[in-house]
Image 1 (cartoon, rainbow, N blue to C red):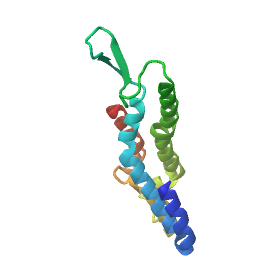
Image 2: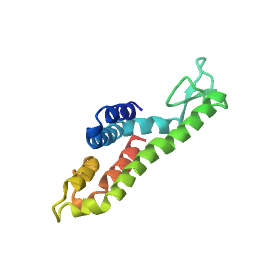
Image 3: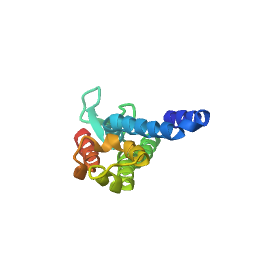
Image 4: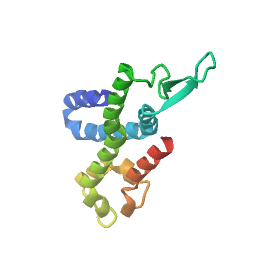
Length: 159
């Protein structure tokens, strides 16, 4: 939200630099989502897990609590239902949504990505390619999609 707000303000103030501001905003969003993806995804997925603890008096009865927040009981409670609904929405928005965001940008610039090694690109094409450079430059051109695979790998490792 903050990045979007800054983009909107800067694009209005510096209208002639609108494309440059847009480019930097997209790059910043990619960096931010990339950095927090594992931690946020892990927290979201931990909302579905419960841990059992023995009661204070040592009897065989166990208390079940949410792994992501020990204050929430896993027994049927309104708080648990709210946490599960929120986690389900965030599961679609974050672990799945970020991957789909990356895939959509890579698909949009697919031809341009493959074209970058074989021909000289004009300034407009270079500008468009710069939007996804964060995702593609660590890899060979024909493996440009590999960052999305890496996100799934990180999700599995942190979960």
